[in-house]
Image (tube, rainbow, N blue to C red):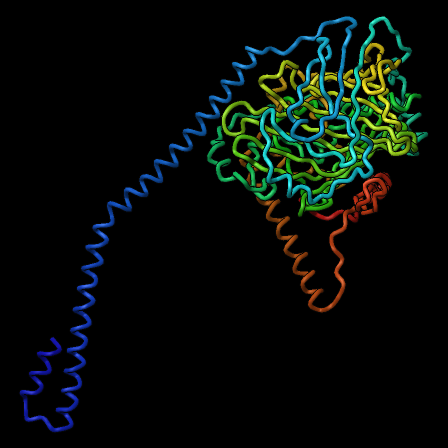
Length: 617
């Protein structure tokens, strides 16, 4: 078209020299444009032909990846089903040993293996069946602390049924080898103290304050169950497959995986059997007291046998009080003191004892199971003199993808009396399909400051714990034999109602934890709206409210970070977030900073002064 117009322009009249030059220039440029356009058309045709040739190849590759993804999902599901069937077959083929009544005789060999690998392969047999078992007994550690950064190292490890490696306890462990024989003819004067007559007057005289009512003898009527759990279908695999290898504390989870309690309330359940500590406080024998303390630490795992729901992660500044002085003789206050990393602090006081702990954890989802490694140290002080410390063992949740969820506890832990140098070493045996022993077994020994065995602890963490004193010693120096008296029942689990599965397998205490009460702080977990909506069965609203609260918390954190950056730019000091009811102090037993109760919460409650509490809900 452009060339034709130029030709007509030249034919109109004889062009001048200047016009001829311009026409020539335009003609050359038109020729270049025609050549470039022709080359572009040819290149486009070549690209179209190449794309048409490669299209089947790309379709085949994408279809192959899609088929492979579906195949892997089916293989994982099939593997989980086979695993569940194998578990059922093993339970039928290898029934757990049923303990018999009456007195029994046990022969126990206790040794320490030279390495952790050999320790993992050690076999444990039920002492009730007159068999022997092997138990590692490290010496009294010089330092009971574990750095919080251990979680990074633990996260990369793996754990599965029957082969989990326990955490190292001490580099200076000593070796002891001996046998324990129970003589049914020996009668010991040790009996379980009765705490039924312990009233509020005794507790008030030792703690200087009253319960929530302040009226001795009055007991509030509390609820015994919560609304039943609604049946909402959920594609578990579609959510979990995106969580593999990630930190669960950074993944938003719907309430479908939760139970209507916060982690602050869940940790308060550790004191469901606090009457064991009341009995321990009455013991005259300090080694017997240690045995009861060991039974108390084991009892805190009893509810995990049937409870697999995830507690709500507390918001920063969220608190929870549980004042049960009027009926149970203890009261506790907990607070979420840090958000990154998540950490809570707790303080509980009872009759002639008080207990406090700082709790955080490392968690990883491994596809087949979920591993939770608790961090932090628990402290117990009895009669203001005897100070005990211990750490929780590893918790593993199995059958995450397919099958019925179940929880296992495994690992070793030491309970140390720092005043007397007494130590109790406990071993939680991991679940094993091929073990001749009953599952969920816990065995331990109490040693005095001279590493002499004084008491034996055994039982299961989901049923009961028995203790027995060592009354005489015989044998050689290298292979001593300790004779023990009859076993004493130190703890027995109170089973939940038969229909508790309808309401999250809650015990009676768990049902009462989230019950509304007057006079508590406005930051209390009872006022958390998403948790309350879930308890009432409104899960869709609970999920929406949960997202709102999490976004509000993120906005508050961004505001604090902005203020910190602004202060740093101006060279001004900036005060970081400080908890309301806890303060950081140097722990003389772990040689690290930890949060301890500042003693102000119950005073503020008595005055009704909550002016310092922020609006977190």
